[in-house]
Length: 247
Image 1 (cartoon, helix red, strand yellow):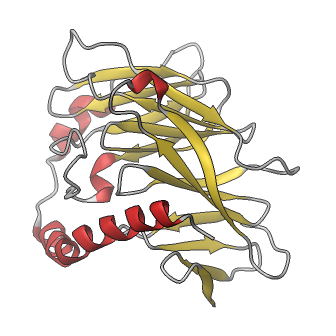
Image 2 (image 1 turned 180 degrees about the vertical axis):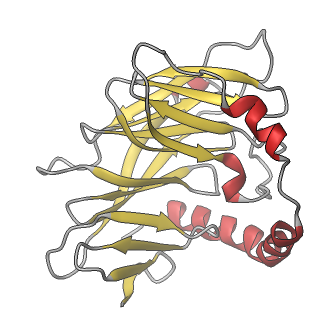
């Protein structure tokens, strides 16, 4: 089950996002792509250590669409985050053509996301790390704040196969290989951001044992889809708090 306060937060974000979603999708379809020369201008730069080459994950903030939740920071940003084999994350601002934050991880990253002021990464050891980078928008920015680290699943084979920051800016959803979808709350402290922490609030499992290979949260934040090795998809409805369909 989802605690009432967390459920209200998920629903509130959905109510704000739902009316804007179709308009954003229509705008995205008609939007011209960036010139190849503009893309090449920053895609050839070395953001990570050249002594340990290779990326393990990347994500664009723009995939979430324009934030409409009132207290989301950096709502005008279209940042990109990359995870390297050098165990660092680089947050890149295409408008400034520079890396605005570099974050150290304790292990290699399997998946990563960024939304509002938060960057979240799932590591190969089954843990999740979250940072607050709200001040990293200029060369004199304060260092990123490590919000916390959490191990959402203690079972064996607890590899996290997907991670999504929720559009309410207060939760994240992870899909675990053990066949679990886990909702994590970011306990944000407005008075003292250093006291912000992470907490597992809900764990969803199908009635029959299975494993998951991938997952994705719907942009509106109330539907999550998980994939199985057999090629089926399981649709979790956070509104009804149930496994709504398998197909």
